[in-house]
Image (cartoon, rainbow, N blue to C red; front, side, top):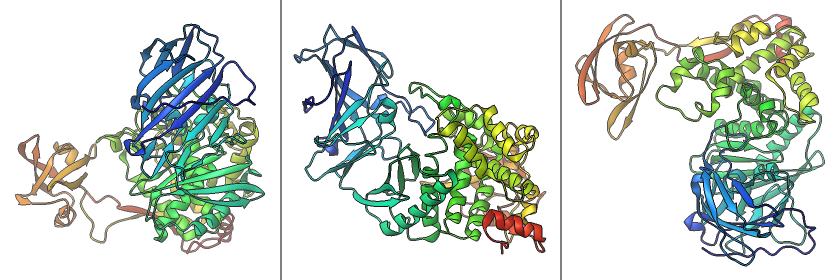
Length: 594
C-alpha cells in the first residue's frame, strides 16, 4: 500500500476534532481507492467509525463496508493503535491517549452506477457514502478532502467548494454534505453555462454520440421551466455529471448536483433522446422534491439502517410525472410525445399484476426489501412506487385542474410543499402531505387515498381523462392471442419460463418459473414461436403444455382464456366539448390531442 502524508494547512483554525481525508489511486487499474483519514485534536479514549450502509436517494441497504480492506491505524508517531471491528460497518479504535490519529484503508471500486464507486485506468468516481467513514458523534464537524490523481492530467470535478490555494482540496460543511457530493476524477469534458444568473456545469465522462451543445440547450430549458414552477433556484451553482456507459441507465439526485448514467449511443434516436431528457428533468426536479421537500423520516438521515416512509410514492412518483411533463412545457417535445410516453407508463402499470396486491404506500415503505430485490414472483406481488405514484399524481393533477378550471393544479401543491417544508427543510408527515393536497384541491380526499394510495383499487383513468377530452383505450394484437400467462426467454439454447402470473391458466395448471418450455400438443415450441402458435387456438381450448420441471418431463393440461390487452393508449374523444378543449389546453397547451 502506498502511504501518503496529509499536510495540515497553517491557515486552518483548529477545532476539536479536525477531520481530513485524502483519496489516492496510484494504480487505478486495480480498482482500489486508497483512503487516509486523519483526525486531529482527538480527546476521547475511543474513536468509533461507521461506514454508511446506504445512500440517500437509493433506498436499499447496499453494505458499502463489504468493499473495505487493509484497515490499519497509527498515532502521530506512526505507532500502531489497537482497534476492533464491532459490527459489519463499525470499527472502534482504542486511541491510547493519542490526539492525532491516522486511519488508512482501501476500497474496491468496480461498479459503475450512480450510487456506487468505479475506478479504472480511464477515471475514478465515488459517492461519499461508499467511501468515507462517519465519526460517531461528530457528524456536524467540517471535513476537508484532498484528491491525489494518479496522473498529472487528471482533473477533479465535484460540487464541493474548493479550498483556496490548495490543489484538489475541497471542504464539506458536515458529513451530510460530504455524502451528498459525488467526485469525478479523470479526463471528463467540462462545459460551463449560465441560467437565471446561476452557474452550471456539465461534466461528461466516456465516449458516445452525445451532443453537448444540444444537451446544454435542452437542459437550460428544463432548468428555466422548473425554476418558474418553484419561483427560483435554491443554489448558487449546480453540476450535471454524465457517465456514458455501455448499457447503464440511472440517476441520483443531490442538493447541488446530480449523477446521470446513460447508454453511450442513446442520443441519436428521438425516443432514446427523449428518455434522456426525461432523466435530466427527473433528477433536477429532485433538488426540490426529496432533497429539500422530504418526508419526516428522511429529515435527518440514519446512514446505518433503513429509513422508513410511506411517502416515496410522492417523492419519486410525482417527480416521475413531472419528468414527462417538464420537457413538454419546455417545448423539447410536443403533446403527442407526452401522451405517448404517458400511455407507455400506463401500459407498464396495467400489465403488472402486483398492482392488485400491493398499495403504493406499502410499496414506499417496503422499498428497502422489494423494489431493488426483484425475484421471479415480484410482478405478482408488488408495484413500483415510481410507476404507481406517477399515475396517482396524474389523477391528482387532473382532479385539481378539472375542479378549478386549470386555475389550480399539482403545481400549486408542489409550491405549497416548498413553502411549508422545503425552504426550511422541515420533514412532512403523510398526514401533512395529504392536507396540503386537499387544501389546494379544496376537497376531502380521504376516499381517494383509501382507494388509490392505501388500497389497491384500479385507477379510474377514464373518469379523470374524460373532462379533458381524452380516453384510455385497450389495444389488442391484430390477431388476438389467447391468454396463457407466462413469459419465456431463450438462454443458452434453452427456452426458460421466466415468469408465471398468479391465477393465470399456466399458473393454475402448475407451470412454474424456471421450467423449460418444450412443446404444445406434442409439437416443439420455442420462445420466439409461442405467440404465433397460440394464435392457432381459441379462448376455452385446452392445450397440452410440455415442460421440463426440475428435470422431470410433464405435460400439463392448460385451458386458455380470452386475450389480455397488449397495451393501453390515450386517445382523443371524437367530439370534445368546448369545456373539454379548454381543460386540455390548460393542461397541455393545446385544445386538440389529435
